Each structure stands twice: as structure tokens, then as C-alpha cells.
Length: 156
Image (cartoon, rainbow, N blue to C red; front, side):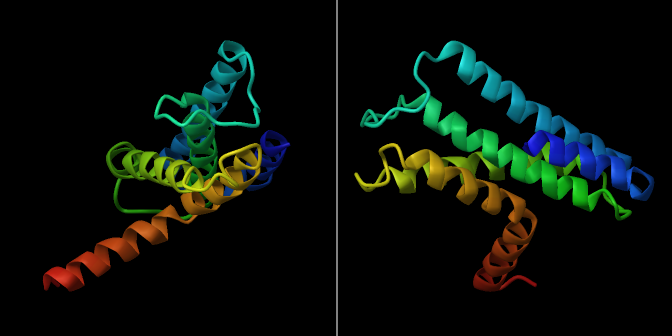
């Protein structure tokens, strides 16, 4: 369903795309999320399970958060491709946003595993929208965080 919505948005707005680098980056992050999801479905025997192992090697759930992080950022990159930008997308998409998506995915994974109530089957229903929304708003979050750090450190 997400794939169909994404394709329909691309078809309607292809003439409005001004920054092809951001558009290509959007498609790349969408494909990365799909590849990770396919990898998880093929390699893992059970995908949804009630009790989570209480260790760090719970790779299925961290990858689940990473998939939704890639999709959320892909959607915001598609929206940003409609506007012309001075800076190239590839530098920030590889250095800044990839690290931020990994951080968001690990943060959601860690916070939801703090409680026994959210580390069971409901983890998947909570982590998907939270990670998607956080990574969709990652551009504003990174900018606000950098401005807050500059204010704290006294740099303008």
C-alpha cells in the first residue's frame, strides 16, 4: 500500500520535480527499505512474535525500525525534490541523514524495549509509525538540534 501511494505521488508530481538528486535519493532510500524488508521476510522464520529476547541481538526488530526510518526519509526527500536547492543532496544524504536514520531507529528500538508492555507484539504497531514520523521530520529535527547545540556552546 505504501508503495502504491508513493508511485502515485511520483506520477502526479514528476513534472514538478526540480532537484533530480533528491528525487533519486528518495528512490534509493525507498529501495533500501524494501530490500531490508525482503531480507527479513526471507531469512527470518518468525517475523512477529510475542516475547522479545532481552538481548542486543534482536536484529529483526532493529531492522524493522530501520525499514520505516528509510521509508519516512524517502517520503520527505520526495517532497524536498520539488524545490530547487543550492547544496547537493548526496553529501548530506550519505553523511548526515544516514547516521540520523540509524540513530532514530536505534532510539525507537531502545525506548520501546524499556517496558515489558511495549516489547511484546505491540512493538511492531508502535515502532512503525513512531519511526516513520520521526524520520519524516528528520530535517527539522536535525536543524533544531544543531541550533540548540550552537546556542548552548555560544556559537552563532
